[in-house]
Length: 267
Image 1 (cartoon, rainbow, N blue to C red):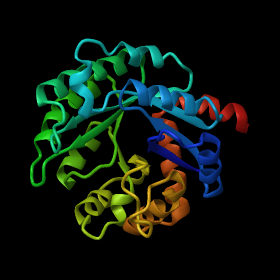
Image 2 (image 1 turned 180 degrees about the vertical axis):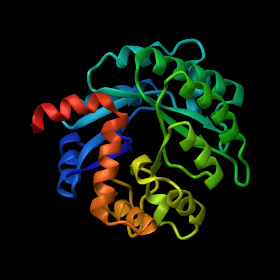
Image 3 (image 1 turned 135 degrees about the vertical axis):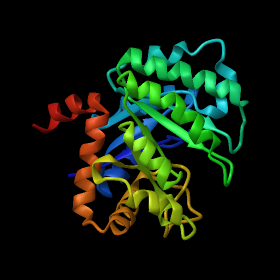
Image 4 (image 1 turned 30 degrees about the vertical axis):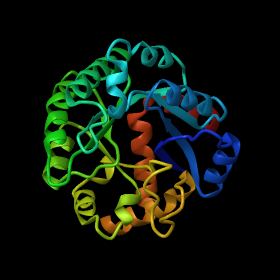
């Protein structure tokens, strides 16, 4: 069974076939490319179109929320594509606040509504200033209603507390873990991971960011996902094959549109 890479960003100038091949050679056979504005969502769609086991999500990163207050229609338009399996990323980032909080919340609400209307899961980004939980609390207020209306979601690159993880898991959330679990100072993330049931864990790289040890200082790549898998398994006290199987099944469970495409080529 291949590992499912549930969150990476494809950079301009990269060769899609080379990226896919290098990932597959490392045991990463399913790739979900994430968009964060119009241009990157279109690029994610193009990447996904070039491989049967590649998919994409169209969204607006909270950094860019203020740019799209008048029109987010491109998201629904791109979501018509059969390879679009989620809406996102979307959410709240109170660490940098490149867009003001009011704009972030407005766009987050609009995209959650779009995900519900389209019947697609949401890919959520939440980041707080150090020592604060304001973004998590505001996001949970919106996600509670979304989940209550039948919405499904993953909080990618989870960095919150154990208590917040338990609150999100109670809404049915999946939590995405990446190279941060290999960072020496990320004890809080490993604690949250230990509290996350195996059937709610997703694996990701967040390429080109958050390169795992032992490759810190290099640009990230989906081919490094096995190192994250190994760290997650060690933190959970589980075998790597157990985590691989569970996380891949979790991904197909959440991103339901992937299932038909995958099964059509692997039955």
